[in-house]
Amino acid sequence: MSGTILITGSNRGIGLEVCTQFARDDWRVFACCRDPDSADALKSLQAAHPRVELIQLDVTNQAQMLSLGEALKGEAIDILLNNAGYYGPPGVCFGKMDRSEWRRVLESNTIAPYMMSETFCGNVAASDHKVIAMMSSKVGSIADNRSGGGYIYRTSKTALNQVVKSLSIDLCERGIAVIALHPGWVKTAMGGPGALITAEQSVNGLKKILLEADITYSGRFYDYDGSEIPW
Image 1 (spheres, rainbow, N blue to C red):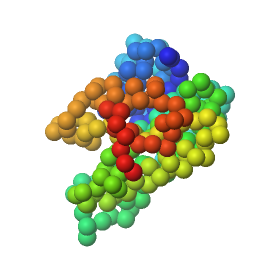
Image 2: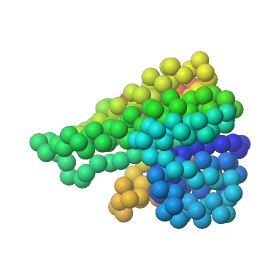
Image 3: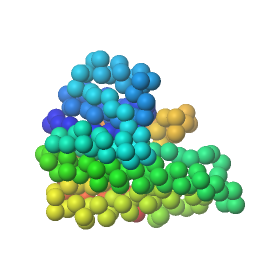
């Protein structure tokens, strides 16, 4: 199939690879990032694939988000992929928390994906495929937490998973499937060079899930290999 996908955080890593793989399949790609002017890899992708459109969007900027919502009014979006996120400062542990950074991570990783879904759910409902996907992380799984720590990033993704579950119920009547995804431990700026898989390997699996997803997938949490992760 081909269609339209809107991706946040598209200028590097997993987001860039998603843009690349969908562009190669002749999808229309709305590639959102904070600074398109400096997104050289995206510019090269656009030059090779004219259906890629670079869009300036800071997901924590509500005015920008609403402006884009108006600009895309009436456009069907088959897949909304909320990929943008922020890990927060390294080395934060119990007894050394930074309130302002915690709020910043929650704003990027939890609140912004919800607001994107609220802003663009009408576009998704008007499409054929009707999928909203959140880039979560296995560290947000309460059942999988065996090592403790990671309070800032963990809580942002656990809260995001709850957003996914509630949206899956609230948007069911509109036929929209809402899913959480774990990309694996990927060799990106966030994952580091010691990670286990490449962005290409991760996105190969994520893409398969995104294309197969229907309403029976909604409200569930998937690893990039297609297996389900407990909440």
